[in-house]
Length: 373
Image 1 (cartoon, rainbow, N blue to C red):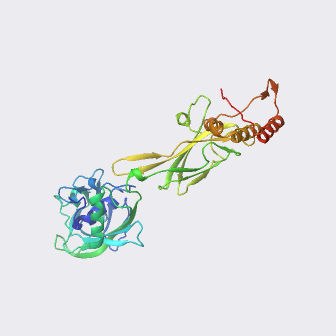
Image 2: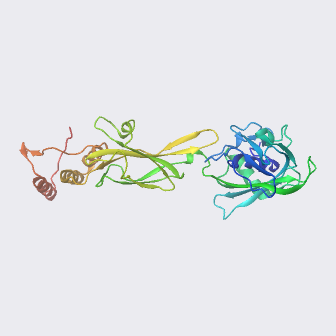
Image 3: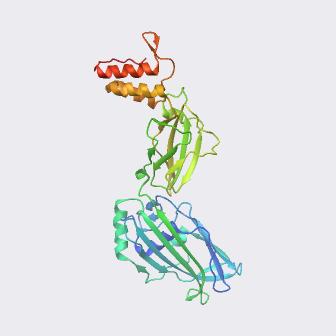
């Protein structure tokens, strides 16, 4: 059975899904109305919550959907209103939008104010009726119905709704359109086909990177424009980066419209030399059922402007290669740093001595065994 309704109700579904938040109408007479409906703006929309599968019609019980139509000038006036609705859709990847459908209601009564529920739009006990002869784009309709037969969510793209309110020329259901007493437009972007497709990937700093600045620049890739970046200090008691993020963050920064951030100079907590930190990025995927948090991997980095001892030892380990190099990389990834006094056969070893030893071993192709305790 099709998940999407016949197009006679498509306009009203889009109105329910994509409608405006409260807005002020533009009156052309002494009558003026406002329409207050919820702004159902989601990254992912599950059609089954808006459509009664058994009847292929708009559901009469859409969660969190209710609103009002109010006559604001003259206030409290009984008015007969006609609405026209036009719905356009811009499918992702298409060169531009197409009109999906347009429709017009018969006159209906607003006695100062009236509620507007899903039951009203679904043609329940309401007096709001859609006139016959509405326009439908059959190609766009088939495209949506074919998509809805395979997937439970609305297609990715932009949805455009234009709603115009007219004063009826006469009281009762036989009136025709008179002056425009309200007009509004709304654009909603459905970004994702499902929460599962949202992946947040970190770019820089690389895992285990050593950064020669206390104000590092972070970059990531996220399909959603709003993210929150977290930075934590990794203390010696933390056995893993994941354990470090159970504490209090050094930085929790909301970022919108960009995918890079330099550590703020006015942050309450400053990063310090010779310390290890972890970071990750999180985004919220909003659906009409729940909000799902999607988190990137957790990466470790160190703040260190210069450590010649570490650089020389890293060079030694890399030259040895194999399991030695891999073990050293693992130690670095958990925040270990080579510090303290170096000795050779119980005698102090300077950095120059260590460099000379490395050069000598490399020249002689000497096989070296390393044990880390």
